[in-house]
Length: 373
Ligand SMILES: C[S@@+](CC[C@H](N)C(=O)[O-])C[C@H]1O[C@@H](n2cnc3c(N)ncnc32)[C@H](O)[C@@H]1O
Image (cartoon, rainbow, N blue to C red; front, top):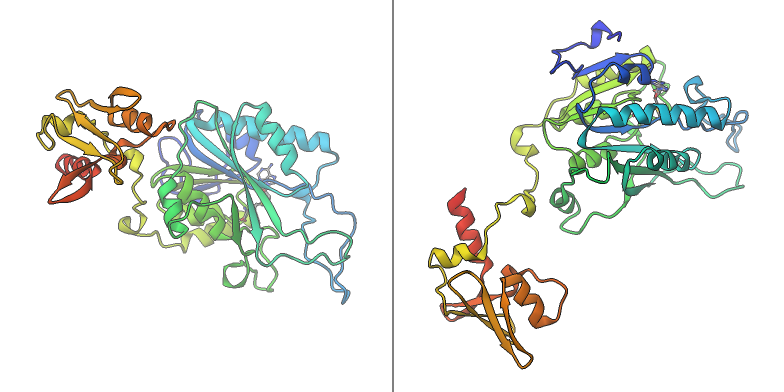
């Protein structure tokens, strides 16, 4: 595996972390150890199959993608290439790892089928809605204003990373949806040579990678990009405190990427701390509340509307008596039963009397968690 000396930094557990490996990505991936990567972000050739040049109404030529790296003689060759790099990518992923691929209508359906055939487990497809798309100059089709990303876990059993609360935070406390409105990479972010020409025809916006990485990795994770181009993945990874590996076969792109990443300042630890996920908080059984004497056996708890009530037992179970009979069990089971609901979060449903006010029992769970911290 040839690593350009320009891009070398300290190796990490035998992996070329913080390096751009020059060469064909399938060959480069074959040289890496299985089960070593947390996340793969892949922006492969689109196989646009452009036929001739495209001109604007003022006869200026459209700066499209007609590079050799995007050309495949036919779809069978493209499919073979796709399946080969995806198989290697899957081998490299840790069992709980995941992969993102981005593509357009030219290639994304073929990639989706390949992922399923290779036993990846599809988690979402995300539509990147371009707020400033290129118009359709010939007026014979809709303006193509989006690209699709597929997010897939290594397998159906993978306990993949999803920072749900960080995504909700990014979206002002509303669940993040699968349609992302992000502009194309323009202005100061667009890398250009001395002649003013774009350094790469398909440089992705950093905002897109920011969201992908914040959502599906943690600081310190290793992110590999087999089609590194100008290194958008590496730049965002470095800023967000993730470790990165870039694979790229074009030395000119790799040089641009290396210079770009060198100039990135990593964010400080505090800025990186993700919104804590409630799922990661230590589990507190209701019995601990009783054991600690925060609520005594025999105390009655009730819902916020005081429609239902239940009595606490010494073993941490509660019992509610309704016209239909008595129901005894956990705070969750009894909460669900009295409402005839499939499930209930008993911590939020049940209340106790504190200083004349109905207070959720969750306060007591938080008190115990604070003692444990
Ligand atoms: C769509 S571009 C990626 C652009 C990148 N995401 C960015 O923001 O700059 C695909 C890149 O993959 C590279 N490439 C294509 N085939 C490759 C292969 N077999 N091995 C390694 N790199 C390859 C191309 O040179 C090109 O830079």
